[in-house]
Image (cartoon, rainbow, N blue to C red; front, side, top):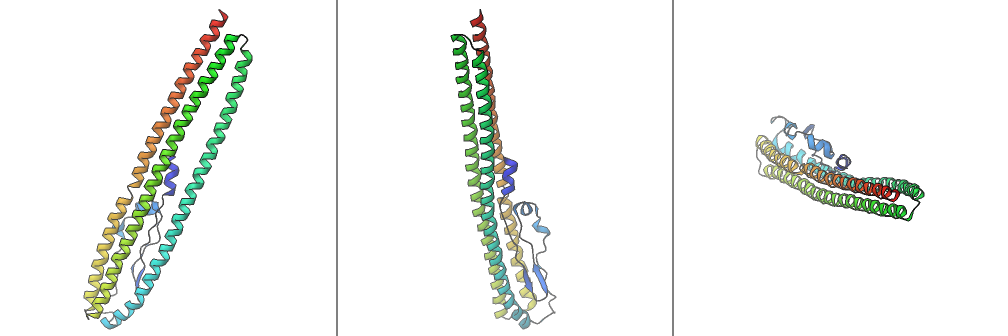
Amino acid sequence: MMNQTTKFTFLLFGFLTLTFPGQVLATSPLLNSEVLKNINLEKVPLVKLPPAKAKNTEAFCADFTSTQAKIAKEFSEKRGKLDVFLKDKDQNLDDERNARDAKLEEARSKADQRRSEWYLRLEARAKTDDEKDAVTKFKQTVEKAVENRRESIDDAIADFRKSVDSALTSRQSSMETTRDAFQAAMDVALEQVKTDCDNNLTTVNIKKKFKDNLKVARAKLSSDKTNLDKVHDDIQTLATARRTIIKKAQVDFDAALASATAELKRALVETKE
């Protein structure tokens, strides 16, 4: 189950495309959870600005006004894509679980059919009342063992899914908080540029302060992402616990079946003595 759950890992981030005229400041595509997990943010260029002497402060600030509108649009588009991605992931997870449930039910149905045929063969061989009673008792013991095993497995699956859903919901909420915090930090950085422009700071100082603010925002994003990635370890732990329960259910069933089989053999031997 675990190798299937990791497929819905479910988070999406988009770094901003910040463009001064003719120059990309920072860019990164929308990322799925696996790409996001492995990306090294330290290697992503923080910012690349045109040389200080490329334009005077007035021209630089005039260009920046239109750039801020583009950035706001980019945020809105990526937020929409993120919402669609998360909705699709939820649907895919439900579809996958339904498919697995259907497959499990089909396997159980076939197993029930095979046991029924097995019981019929045993009953056909039972001639005396004692032999028939022994077969009936054997059948009841095996069916009870099957029922116990299925209940344990079903409970393990239900608990696993509930815990996974809780972990994913928590991660999604934290991811959205992280995204919003990054956007807020970027808004502050952009507003600082406007303030500096209004205060007639030099282009060199405006760009330096912007790069410093952007560096802080991205460092915080990297730290938050590291915490989000811990959900993979949490799900691994949940999957291990589920497998342990299922394994014990199978061991208990095998023991019950072996005991019932031995008792049936003794009963059949005794009836012939």
